[in-house]
Image (cartoon, rainbow, N blue to C red):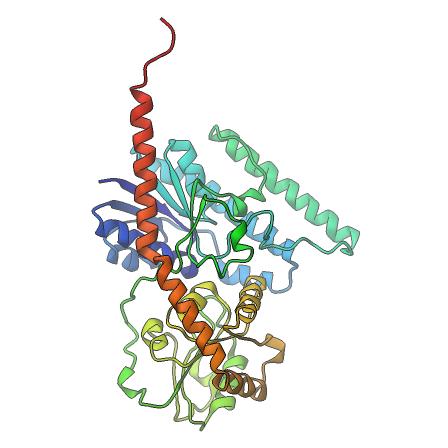
Length: 419
C-alpha cells in the first residue's frame, strides 16, 4: 500500500478528474490525503481520501472578470502571478502540517505549482494531471502578444515577467530547488503526466513523448443533490444548455435561449448557476426545466444536443456519451476547444457575439439534420472508452510508483565501487 498527497487549484474543472483518479487508487487499496479549500470537503471525503483544509487567496470570479479585457499574454501573466502568490502562502502551511511525514508520491493538477515544488522539497516522485491540453514546442496554449503591441504595454508586460521570475527564483532558492522560468509552470511535464483527454482530441497529439499518457476523461459519478425531476423529461428530444461552473453569469445568453426554444418540440434543460436569478430570466416556457445545477451525467445520457461553453470537462463528458456539441466559447481556451470540435466534425462553434435566437435555432437544426456529426461523436465515444479513463490512469500511477520503488531498492543494494 502506498500513500499519496494530492494538490490542486480550487476550481471544479481541474479538481473533478483528480477525484476520480483518487477514488480509483483508494479502490485498489492505496491511501490519499487531498489538500484543498473547504467547499471540496464532501466530494473529497466521498472518494475515501483524507481531507485537509486551507484558505485560498485565488478569487476565480475576480480573475475571470479581469481576464475578459486582457490579451492572451496578460491573462498568462495574471494567472502566473496569482498561482505564485498562492504557492508562497501554501508551502510553509503544508510543510508544517505534514510535520516530517513523507508520502510515496504526490499527485497534482498542472496549475498547482506547490505540488510540484513539494515533490522536489520532499524528494518523492510526482505525477501531474492535465485536465486540459498538454503543451510542447508544437502546441502552445497561450499565444504570444502580437508584434504590434504598443511600446508602453509591451514594457509593462516585460516588467511583470521579470517580477514573476524574480519572485519564483527567490522561492526556489528559499527551498533549495533549482530555479526555472515562470513559463515552465504550465508547460512542465513530470516523468508521468496524465492527460484526461484522448490523444486524437489533443492538438498535435502525435508529437508528445512517452512522458504524456493520454488516459481520456476521468469521470467520477456525482451524487445528485439537485432534486432534479428526471421523471418529467418525457419522450421529446432533449436539448441541454450549460455554461459550466465558472462562466455562467450570463443572464442575456439564457434569455436568448429561452426565446429561441420556447414552445418548440425540444425538451430543454438549462443549468444557470447561482449568479443568475429567476427574476432576471423572466417567464419560463413549459418545455424548459431551469435550475442552478443539474445532474449533468444523468442529463447527458439522455441528451441529443449540448450547447455549452467549450469547457474541457463538459466537452469530454458530452463526448463520452456521444453527444454532439454547440460550443459558445467564453475565453481563449474555450475557443481552442470549440475549434477542435469543429475540426473533428463533432459539432459547431458559435461566437458569443453571434448568439441570437435565430443563430441558435439554425445551429441546432443543422446538427439535428446532419447524421454524420452524430456518427463522428459516436466514434469519439468509442475512442474515449478505449483509452481507459480512470482505470488507465490508476494503472499508470501504480506501475510508475512500483518502478521507482524497485529502482531505489536495487540502487540501495548495489555494490560500491572501489576498495
